[in-house]
Length: 444
Image (cartoon, rainbow, N blue to C red):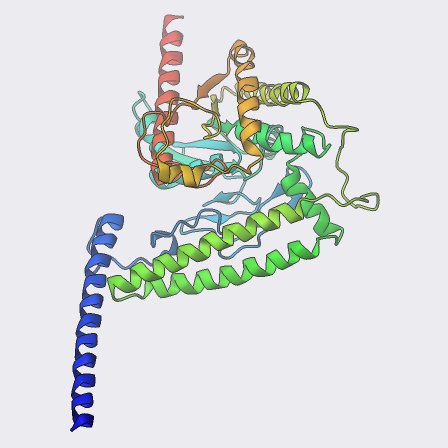
């Protein structure tokens, strides 16, 4: 009898456990359905199944799913991204290492095509991708008389880590190859102070390409990559494999709970990937003590320049390069717009939410001081730029009235909401400038 009672109690406990488990799963599914609706603005069960991994709701910025984690040397530009297959649907890393739907030089196929070249670093590259997808700038330009029926082609000549005079060199190179440009937008500022300051601290000439990119490539070329860097590389590759597997699983989820849990897991892997990437960057940028046998020549300084001297030189390089870009383009009547990008480390009136602060700021970053000293140095060059008729768009306060989070990392990059605000501001500013030019020309 005792055994029977124990058995009955066991069965009763099992039933209760199963009921609680079923309720837990039901509530988990209901909660996941709500989470999915808030995130994607659609119901999970009648959703359009995304075929594109970039549309799964995972923040994949900075994750190269199919590419090498390193750039490639270029004899004229310093470095480029490795040309390869689709970067994301509709894009590729083209024959010159720029993220674009087209190979370069691009040749017009219709008389109404209007080619806009975008120059700068990773923020400019992100802007160009966003513009190709959303056509924000063309929406503004179509408001001008005679521009409504134009087909706008956005070409990116921007790469992460570029700083002046790289934009100037890239522009002249492609003009020499016969690339037609009807307008140029140069978005920069952050790299010109943040990365140039890293050059200075490592006794590398300020006008040289970023040592964050050049030294690792030199180490590869000299077969001198450290053991720690190679270990980080292996961990990055392992994370990348798991991320791809997780994204494939995410595409095939039939339950909202599966989607929610897998999303959290994959985002965790992405965060690990970025952490290991930072470790790799730290290791691979360490200069070898003896570089006398290096096959790569890099201009160096005898000592670290004082901040007052260094940032004045950075600002001078930045301004002069922009002026020369304008001069070469104005010879062909090509409008040139220079945009100073916003950055979280240059303090404005913007109020950051606590969640965004965790994403956007890093106490250990070397960039904060560079921006805090460097941006005012750039501002001092504004009168010289204006004297040389540069159409300058100062966007440093563009996010001040935005309550939504706009930064996607602790460097300088923007999320979807940030891209919308930034692109609209650039579009409005360019439209206003062109209208003023048009009004002035009518008075003459």
